[in-house]
Length: 292
Image 1 (cartoon, rainbow, N blue to C red):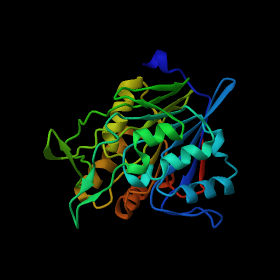
Image 2 (spheres, rainbow, N blue to C red):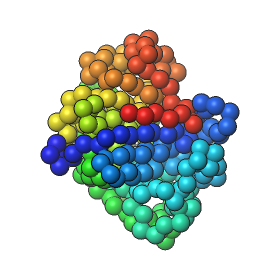
Image 3 (tube, rainbow, N blue to C red):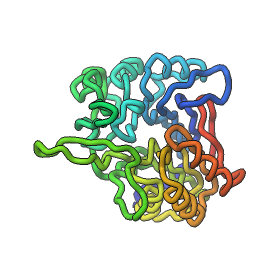
């Protein structure tokens, strides 16, 4: 993978939609959507990573931030949940493109639901089925494997679960062979950018695979040991103090240069990260832009 992956020169991550705002000119909404602009040599490509759950809010924020939906070269879905995929078909239509690559895990369209306080589906909705997405203009690229998107950029593919303290973080269920089973969120993937002389920028959705599992996999996959930055949701909301403590401790061992977290990370974990990392930690917020 290191030889195949190559290196990128620059990456800019703009938060299009998140639970909080960086300034008053944009709109917050529970969920996450990121605009990732990567330059490698003479080529610059734009990746829309997740779309939140409200197309009107998303495209309004894009307009206010000076970003055209038609500028997207590909869309990456980090997992199936509604607050990352809601209204996806409409977002695709608003790009005005046909055959825009849509990259995701092949399990992304499975049933995914909670049982408390009532039975409620939290995965991809019928309006965003595979057929609807194709009709809207998407070219579905569904793979469990890492996928190179350009020089220096790859998805993680399915992430091995190797830690003994990380878990999905939310009690979700699915149906397999007619049986009700806990959903282990195998579709949780992340985006990796290998920056020249700087290391990896790791972009997550909710880190249902566990952020330490994700980072260990990123290093093993690429052979790049330095983590320049981690950006996204870490899904530690509601996690035990023990899990938060282990996560922070292992993050300190991995020693990323910067951690930018929010959405599903949770207040207690955010506070713990700030205490441990100091100025190396920053919060995600709609309208914020991070350049490396």
